[in-house]
Image (cartoon, rainbow, N blue to C red; front, side, top):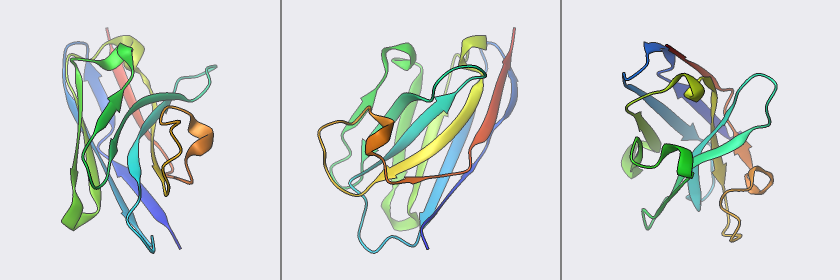
Length: 125
C-alpha cells in the first residue's frame, strides 16, 4: 500500500518561513517525480513545485519562484518544501503528490498517481 505522509504545516506570520516534509512508502519502484500542490478554500487544487526523483530537476509555479525551494533525500524517501517570505495568499492545504512515470505534463494534477492527506498552512497578515 502506497502512503504519502505530510508534516510541518502550521500558522505563520507574513514574511515568515515554514518547512514541509513528505515521506512516502510502498512504491515498488522509485517515483518519476514527487512534489506539492495546494488548495485554498473555494479554489481548485493547483500546482506548486515538484522535483524529479532521480535527476533532481525542479519545476515550480511562477507564484512561488524565488520563495519556495524543493529538495529530496533519496535514502529517506522524503521530499522537503522550504517556504520563505510567505504571503497570506499562500494559505492553503498543501498536498504531497507522486507520479510513477514521465508524462510531460508535470503541472497537471491529473497525471499524479498518489496523494497525501494534506497539511494546512495558514499565513496571517
